[in-house]
Length: 483
Image (cartoon, rainbow, N blue to C red):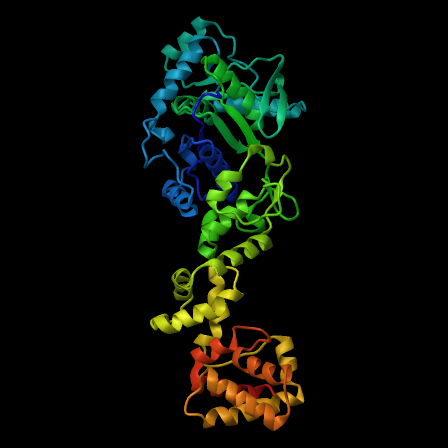
């Protein structure tokens, strides 16, 4: 396939949200295609009609677009290889299933659900791995025809070789060997006429010209089935690369029980798409250097399957937060205001004063990891009362010098016609001269009195947003309640 245009695909099932593991698969597939001047295809695998979630397909497509991963072909972008939704391709699958029956590589199976369950129970009782036992594998053509003519419900199964082994080269894992006796006679076409994943994925990858399949390691044991289908239909198999699992910090499989796993969750919490994509790219792939920040364009240039790890990668939320904080700080002032304002609105903040909202956002953005932390960081700007719970801040207010500084500062502030940064600095200089208190003992009590914290937004920003009346009110509250 070296002379072919590289074509990769991402083929999710519309059963809910876009998993971050799915995002990584899509990202790597996109990067590989773009690096080789090829195309990236989005295909929706919805043949399991019992698991469909209304609106999930549209949400998957929106999530991908949010990340900046643009597919060249898909349900809403026809590239001449559609339909790109499997439920709209059922006649194609039936045709190839029938072809496999004709050439002896698949067969009709009339086992009922009850028979299959009884088979499973017998095998488990005997200490065997449950699997289809081949009841209809070698029935006479006359018997099969009789059942078909009677209209009996049936499926079509793959006739998997029972001896030997399947050997294939994985672009991440190297040579893989799987004993054929471990592989079941997979159902290819269900009794409702819909294909299983295993038939549909092979047919679609071939007809859509996919040259490289990048997917999760959970599909490794299915490869012998797929290669057998390719062989039965006389097709060449694409190259394959199987990615290791994403892990929780305790090295168990990443799951919602231990945290968010949906791209939509990270969108809602205010992670920037650039940060999430950058972070996910490094979950299993290394650039071979200490560099950690990559734009999508830079990833296209540097990505390689050879640098993908065979071992699982831990989803480190602290690192994602650190990375997102970096990207937030890189935003222009206008972009930061535009991005964070909706999070303040969602939390109930009054953003009707655009100038004040801008000042608040610029005052707090250095102190947050993600969008939904903006309101908590900005809470002092929306409250008329100050509640101090930080132990270090409370301890600082107990210092004898704190009351002296705050009382002197309040006297100066109340005497001013207005309070801005220049008059604030002048007042603090007078307090220092009159009390002899300087350094942290001079500035920290005022910071705590205005923000409730030892460290917080820069005082010039706080003063500029508060104004004289609120500054004096907060200092009075502290003098009356905490010192």
